[in-house]
Image: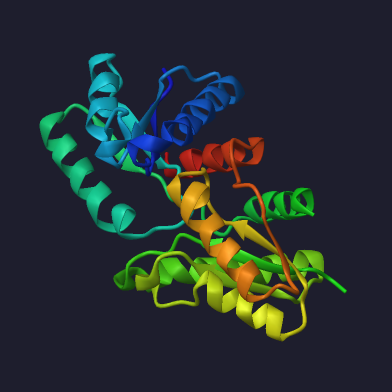
Amino acid sequence: MNKGVVILAHGSRAIAWEANQLVVKIVEMYKVKTGNKNVKPAYMNSKSGGPSLEDAVTELVKEGLTEIIVAPWFLTDGLHIREDIPEIISALEEKYPQAKITLAKVLGADERIVDILIDRIEEAK
Amino acid sequence: MNKGVVILAHGSRAIAWEANQLVVKIVEMYKVKTGNKNVKPAYMNSKSGGPSLEDAVTELVKEGLTEIIVAPWFLTDGLHIREDIPEIISALEEKYPQAKITLAKVLGADERIVDILIDRIEEAK
């Protein structure tokens, strides 16, 4: 069985709901590329109007997943990644002792990010 | 002459200064890949401790650049991209009428972002 995956967005204030929808598109692209259907989006910002990390993990646990990877759709590891998210994951592991929940690394200084920036800058000229 | 480029990070609160340094690495990678030396990092969050968009554009204008692309190192277009940054750019164009300042698009739902997420999730297993 595939592992469960939560793709975790920062999330934006409600006025920019279209901005928040982008992670849903990323989740769909991930499902198509990997064939894993056990993938859910979640948002750190409660004002975003979307499901929280707790909501997404709870759904995966209810669907019977026992290994869950939380993948931050974040460029860099600020305070959410260093403090808030590990605390939420610890609480979820206490709540669901049958589940192993692992936090993946952020996107980081990856060559492919630089390649996308090169394209965006080229397109803007 | 190359155009000036500002790679604009969201920026994090001061405690996570290492997180803020990542955009400096992205700028270095961009310079190496493109050969353009007229590239500066900037931060939206004034608590990040780094140069602001105003600081970076002012430096490029003082160095004689008249065409400047502001490339947001942002995954999605929340309110900073839709409202705050265009306002700052308009004010800078009034201040420096010799400069044309263009805002590039965000990274967005790019296949390469999904490929990086696939790697991060694989590494976390």
